[in-house]
Length: 262
Image (cartoon, rainbow, N blue to C red; front, top):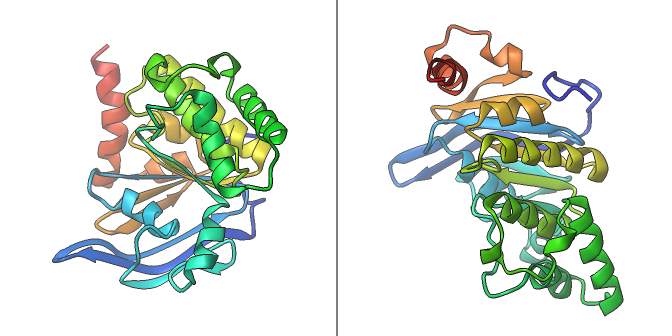
């Protein structure tokens, strides 16, 4: 699968957003956003700090309420849903936090067991153990099962954070800066894991990132968020084949500037 080209094979929407608006006081963050994420595809959302990228995925997961517009996730209207239905929907949405959000006082095994014990109380201890072993194997960290988060590298914590999300077998993955603060080799490993998750778990994903290498490697489509709206969407080459300075600045910083500094 060539993830840098738009794949028209995806048809049914997993996420459908129309006319989404969100402000905080006088600060307009999202100003009429339209976005469709098709089932089984990865979309990378790019934008400057404070452009509303994280606000967008918090609204998708029901952590924030929009001021207006509609947000449909897996056929459910997130902006108009009961608390009980929202809770059930959230079990189908995996959230990979920038900080990995592991519990420091828990071992890797305990961190992975926590969402299962909390949300799937019918599972036996043996079933929980099997799920933990399987998901650790999938992220390549079986040997860390008894370690504490403080004993892990940054890349390992990212992987365990993704594993804790995958253990509930979500249909949607929301990645918040998955390669932030990592060295280039570890970034490449995380990018490969994101693609593996897409292919193996058949997830639909939004990847919030400033890292164009990550976006190019993992996303079927790119969406550039500027001034509260998506200025451009499409495959990587289409989005960056432009003279728009706001768009070009992302490319130049990630590639041209880094090349000149070598």
